[in-house]
Structures are given as structure tokens and as C-alpha cells.
Image 1 (cartoon, each protein chain N blue to C red):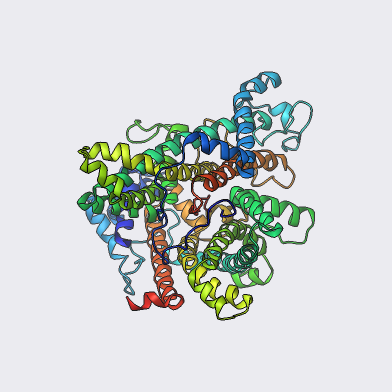
Image 2 (image 1 turned 90 degrees about the horizontal axis):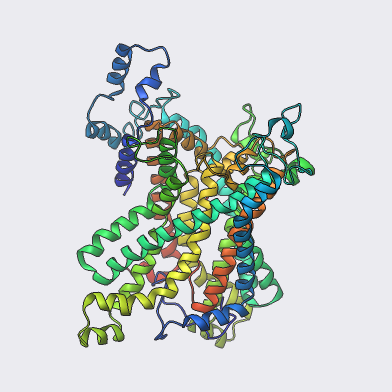
Length: 309
Length: 331
């Protein structure tokens, strides 16, 4: 799968006529000779499949091969792609992990509470709010949060991370709080809905009836049995979303001016910086694959039936 | 939602088919659906909102005539003050002015046209492709299914947003791409979005067709001598219509948000006013120029929310055991 993604990405960007990379590499004052020279040194004069093979080697997760610096070397910034990813991934990771903690916690709570009394006031309120928050794009929520909490009230820090601050200090200074809220609102709405539906379904299941008939208190029936059953499909959903987000959250990073992986990928794509595009594509696909693997393990833990097969 | 009539059966084990077909022999008829929709709070709210957006889309040229401001016309002298800051809402410019000196009210109304156009055409594209591929897979099975299912999987895991960005930025230049065959503009954006939004639809339709293939009424039609094509179009296709409608209503908001996201990042259609584009232009000035966020953001939210509400209502009415998805806008 990783290989297919990389081949397709490469083919598409190879075929897109967005300017000659060699031309851009040497800059404005260039003679045909220097262009030819650069082309040769970058390997741009080789046929399609040979160029691709060099990139393909970078997929193999062996030290020295994975995202090899000689091949995955940005045309535009003349920095190894690996270095850039290492620098930017922590920003995206802090953003996404923080938001994930928030959204999983809050949405499970809301989902459970609204499933306990379906059709009640709390349920109806959260249902409308949920629909509202899946409908407003993150960049609008982001602006609103910034406008009111930073610009008007002044209780939250503004956008961006000063260059002398490490990711960790930025984290401690609360620079991620608004991005977390912004990113998680959408997912809270989505996950609360799914949790609610799953818990409701579990409450109607035979196993719940059995648990009730054993005289277990309702708290245990809902909190332990129903929730556990409801979690299983949620874990899959979470794995996919989490993996995808770790690959970069362009709009959030743009609104809050965070130097994350999403912005890097975006600029690489816009500038048709093929090594950078390939590098981030390989990296993000690998991350997504790893998350899916972790999810499978979690799955077996939550649902004993799967362990057998 | 399950507050309405009919209790749902406990779901098949985790990972089972998303759309378990229960014993509902015939899809509900259109008049009865409409009747029940009118009683659904969500559906009514959604329909009202959508009508509002449709109305402002239709009235956009009228408003442009009333104000005398074209959608792409710049009013640097009247709209931008001596510090280069766009002016806020006033008698001439009801929704204020954008950083390029254009009338936000006119552009917001025209933005409704863009959003609806993208929404309708790209959703139609995704639906046609998704249903066709899904039916081919599920109904015929075998090698066709094997190959096409891999294609579906591929479309579901591809970094679609990235590829879209690449195509949109490479073809968005004035000279277009592929030797000028692909021209930049709204049609390119619609095409890209439609082409990358059908994967989920195809997968669900495939599952349904697969389940229907072995149902009694399909077998009965076969036994009575109906041709494969007839079975496909007269028996299987009508049975999946409710699902397809629900899915279509879920694709629509996703597609509208997709366009807004692309335009926000500056790779959308440049030739037409777009809510996303105005929101993107607000990036550095929004604390002072709040009107650049408020108006396009409000209408974007109303549009997407209305369709989502309609979908919620339709889900209640058509299929109490609906599957909600993550077909929302992704960051």
C-alpha cells in the first residue's frame, strides 16, 4: 500500500508540468549549460522509472535507506526532507495528540450522558450543537476563537510560535490551547454522535439484558458493559482519523500559524518540490499504517472475540 | 436517530456490514417520505435554510445591480482607507470591503452560487461514479469486484487532499496544464472534487448490492426469466435508492467544505467569488476586519448546516438504522 501511494504520488507530480525543477534550482541567472549540469546532478535527465526507483528505495524502513538524504533532498530549500520532517512533526504531534485527548474524553462523556436518556433535554441540546459543529469548518471556528479569546478578551495567546521557543515551551505557554479546542470541536461532535448511537444499540443488546438480569446496578451496566461494546467501532474510527491528522492539519496550522508538517507539505505541493512531496507522502502514509496496526492490537484487547482469529 | 418509530435490531458484531438490511421489503414511497419529512424538525429547519441560500444565490445579480458593485470589481478609493485597511460595513458597502477593495456583500451573495454549483455538480459526479462502481462490484462480483475494490481502497487511502492541492496548483496557472486542455477555474475544481469524493459511496453501495444479490426477490426475478440487466435496474437499483439518497446528502456538505478549504488555502477557483477565498484573505487582518470572517463564515455554516439537518431528517425517515459517517470537512 505504501508503495502504491508513493508510485501514484510520484507519477502525478512527475507528469504535472509545474515548471522545471532544475530551472528553479539554479535560479534566475542560468545558462543552458548550468541547467543541464544541475539536471544531471539531480538525476532529472534519467527516465521516469529510474527516477522513481531512487525514491522507492526510501520507502524501505532500513536506517540509511528510509527517506535517504541524497534522494529526499528538497529542490527548493536545499535541506534534507528528513531534517524538515523531524523539525516539524513534533508541532503537529503535540497539536493532534492534545486535541485527541480532549475530543475522546469529552465526546465519550457527552455520548454516554445523552444515550442514558435519549430524547431528553441534554440529548436534544447536544444533538443540535453537534450538527452545528460538524457544519462549521475548522478555519471559521479558529477565527472565532482567536477573535474572542485572544483579540477581545486577551486570555489566550495569539498565533504562531516565536522562533526562540521550542515546541515544549510553546506547549507550556499554552500556545496550543486554542488550536486544540478548534481541532477537537469538530471531532467531539462527530464522536459524541457515534458514541451515543453505539451505546444506545448496546443497551438494547442481549448482553445488556443479561447484565441487568444479574442484578448489576445500572451504573455498571452502562459504564462498563455498554460502553465497552460501544468503544470497539469507535477505536477503528479513531485510528483512521488520528493517523490522518498526524500527517498534517493544513488549515489549522495555517489559521494558527503553526510551523507543522501540514504547512510544509502544503508549500512543497504548491512549489512542486517533488522530493519534499514524496518524503512527506511516504512519511504520512507510514504513520497512518502504524496507527492502523496499533488499532488492530487495541481492538483485540477490547473485543476478545477477535483474538481467536 | 432512534427516537421515532420502530426499534432497531442489535447490530451485527463489530465490523459487520454497516448497512445491515432488515426485513423491509420495499423502500418507502416518495409521497409518504415527504409527508413524514414535513413533520421532522430537523428536515424542516434544513429545508428552510437551504431555500434561503438558494434565494440569495438567485438574487445575487439583483443585489449587484442595486449596489452597482460587480462581484469582481475593486473600489480602492472608496473601499480602502488611507492606511490601506479595508473599510467595514457602511451604507455603501453593507458587509464591508475586502483587502482588494471588493464589496463583501456582493461577493458573499455570489459565493452562494459557487457553493451550490460545486455542491450540486460535484455531488452528482461522486454519486454517479460511486453508485456505478459499487453496483458493478457488488452485483457482478468475481474479478470485477476484486479489481474495482482495490481501486476503491486506493481512493480511500490516497492522500487525496495533497494530490488535489497539487493538481489545483499546477493547473491553476493562467496557461492551464496538459497542453492547455485543462483550463483553470471553477470547472477544474468541481471536477477534482467530484473525482475524489466517490470512494465511500462506492463501498457502501457495494456492500448493499452484495447483500441484495442473494435475496429472495432478486432470485425470484431471475427465475421468472428477467435478464441480468433487468434485475440490476429494476430490482437491485430501486432497493438501494434510500441509501443512495442518504449518502448523497452526506457527500454534499463534505464537498462544499472541500471547496471552501481549497479556496481558503488559495488554490480554489480564482475566477469566481468564494466564501472560502474571502475567509482566506482574512487571515492577516481578521482582528480588525471581522466582517471578512463573519459574513462568508455565516453563510457557509448555514449552507452546510442546512444540508446536514436535511440529512438528519432524511435519515430518520428513510432508514432508522442509518450510519452516520465522517463525511465532514477534514482539516
